Image (cartoon, rainbow, N blue to C red; front, side, top):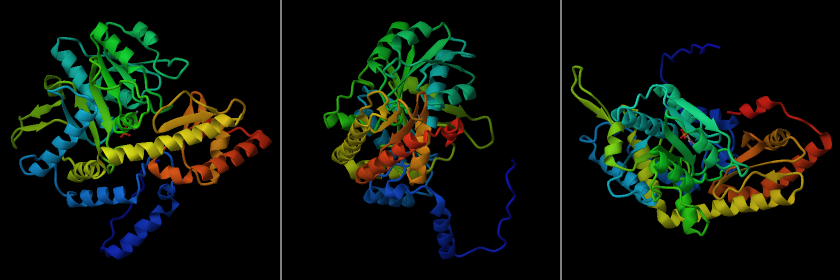
Length: 417
Ligand SMILES: *Cc1c(COP(=O)(O)O)cnc(C)c1O
């Protein structure tokens, strides 16, 4: 299907009318404000959303492509990166950037690894990235864009990366290995300490994808959750990705990529001057970089502080534990693995989870799915604490309906994205 042509209106429309139309356009969207959605949106509470929105608006025209023109944004980016580096135990001399999202952070980590390998004289064409089966597709996208290959290794019975199997899959072409903290499908944290040992033993670049956990796990740990080591405190970890627009509760368009050393980071930068408008040096993919996204991240981090993030993390892990406990008590349902943070998935030993998902959708609950094994996927926000009981009541009703009808759902429903 081609894109439909649509005429630009000949004359303009006043803002009030447009605002009404914008609100009306959203009326068919998922109701995330009421906590009915457990994917795509992170709802930390109206106060935090307001801070992000106002900070974004203050800097929406400013452009982080020009740090000389906008020392404000340079300072905010440096401070955001600095806070991330210290939360993730980076050593002195580490360096990072704010990017547009997890995908860009991962793309840049892969590009940096590739170019560092090239600088050592390695032929990077067709070089391999070794991933657990549960790692995010952004690595495959990066490999596709950058002329590398990915090799996915099945996860262990506990749904975490199988480090022994990954060690056995290392070849002369392997340049990067990946672990997730946590992985998206199951919310479990891969054994990063063992991956770090493997990386050191075989001189490989270990990237830890903490896109969804980087601004959550440090606070859950302060709350007493037994989060295992997963960051730069492990010597084999060379780079990390951590999304501000997930559990950092920043406005969308904000993530961070971190490197263990400045020397390593240099391979991330692209420099060019063979055109008529002077030299251009950009550390990230974008040219123009939205000041609003950086300002919103800076403002939310300073608004919440460690105490604010810890309180939000507590709400989320309490809600996850409550949901998982109720699911464990229902013999028609089964939790997948042992997630410790804000996302988890569950299925059923007898019923088709996609059929249950369909019933929940009709009741107004929008969430993700897993396919290996089939399951319902929930990525929780602080706002879900208030609706957990209602969710569980609807879940019990949906399970009973599917048990009574024996209904199966079509696989295609997994393609909700
Ligand atoms: C969300 C996510 C990504 C990708 O981040 P985007 O911001 O959606 O590009 C990568 N890895 C994990 C584990 C994620 O949860």
